[in-house]
Image (cartoon, rainbow over all chains, first blue to last red):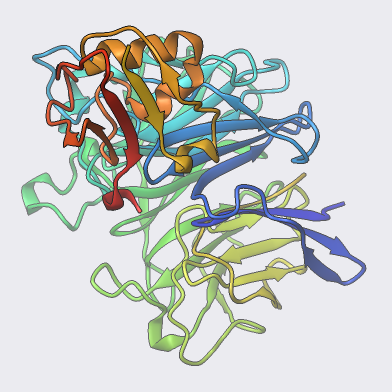
Length: 362
Length: 89
């Protein structure tokens, strides 16, 4: 039963707990400090929080008592940079994604970072190793920043059936997949279309900007993305992404979530456009498809429908493990939760710090 | 021996007591501090061992300019202040 939601913000990590019919906010952790990502590991109950301190850099904390106390871990660190190295400085800028390995990989964690490095830990985050096989790809120096100065890995999709199979989404570097625990990688972004590039380069897989990449645990072979230039889906057994053009309101946005047991159901939070990153007509809406993108419903009940200028980032939309609960958190500090897959929404908070990521616990 | 003094701002996150250490350069003095306080290193220096972008160091009132090498010399009676830069706030 879903009873808790973590909210990582510009000013701390908040935990909401459902009590009877209401969600109540608890004491914040790291109050005043930017928390770029957090992770509750369902395999052992450990909680991780990635901080991005304005002066003192990226920090990683771990709690084994559900957030009552935290210990500092050594954050992932880039190796010494060769003098001739091209591309961005080999310096950790941000932890943008944290995911667990599979159930048969206890202690395995993955971290996606800016400036584009993927890190793996085999010991519950105590130590981290840069995945050199991806970092050393010559194509990497062709990646560029999307929203930040340097490229970054924001999405890590681990196949729950096979922990050796991992896909990562990169802004801007496409989607890369390994089938052998990271020994080899291939870019699988064919079919995406980058409207921000010259026409002859719009189809280049290596410069695509998938804002978020997800897959349903029920069908890990089918990938969804909210891309900078639209919504795309890569069906199982297909070797290309297909653009979905049926999304109402707008096809621009950052977030996407898929249903845990119904892979044809997905949610999106549209914004006006690249140039105007606010809701269309000041109305916060969520788009839902139940048929793999053939058609959509626009859900509004309980969401602000006038003078709303909240933007929802990549990790600002989450669905729980039952597929019933949804949450949306905005850069204006708005937080809405739905108990019916988005049909109706309750305003849970309106004055939080800017929200970077939300995640249901369990 | 030079004295290394850390601003209170960093002490909210990690222990950083004032330290009297050996060292004839800023780099050497800081390295001596970090020998006994490894967690503090990551708050002051980045992955490449350079001074973090939004940290500043003053030696006897003069701001350290060699932010990568930290090669400025220090005297036995020098005071090395490690501070947060307003640019990072």
